[in-house]
Amino acid sequence: MTLTISNNVLNLADLQQKMDETIFDYIDSKPNWNKAYIILDEMLEQTTKYFLNIVNSKGLPTPTTYWVIFMELNAKLIYFTTLALKNRTQKSNGITDELIANRFEIASKCLTNIHTDENELFLQEIKASFQEVSSREDYAGLNDRKAESCIEQFYEFAKAY
Image (cartoon, rainbow, N blue to C red; front, side):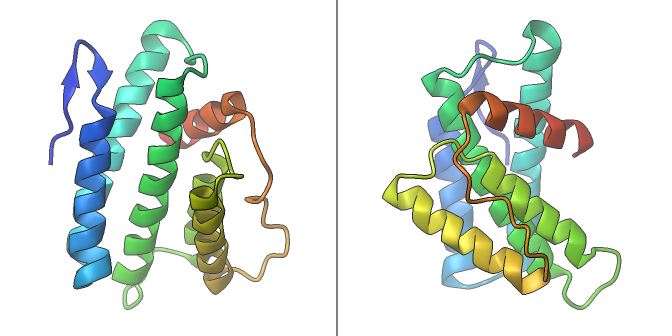
């Protein structure tokens, strides 16, 4: 599934729509974890590649409305990709609970405004998923972050993805 980029700008409405459709079709309605993972992982690869191209040509972006929305969408994309990976690989080896827990935590660290009702519910969902795979008590995903630190966190994730 290819995301729309025109004039070097990723279409966030297109990303939101494709992500929502995938989550509804393959996670919420009739779970097909493998299909969900394949599609979401491809979207995440495209968004990280797009972000790294921006950083390489212009440096880290300043936190405008566009980049705040970009971070929120990618927080959800990281979370749902990781959730699909977790459920897809319950019967196989190679993916550790620590990797899954770290990605859940990264998703929460990319969320810029945790005080909206939607984001508070989303953070509760991330924390519950985190606690399913980790006994760590130091879950750092409930702290409010400035957009700059979310962008930096996503940059570190994108470099490693």
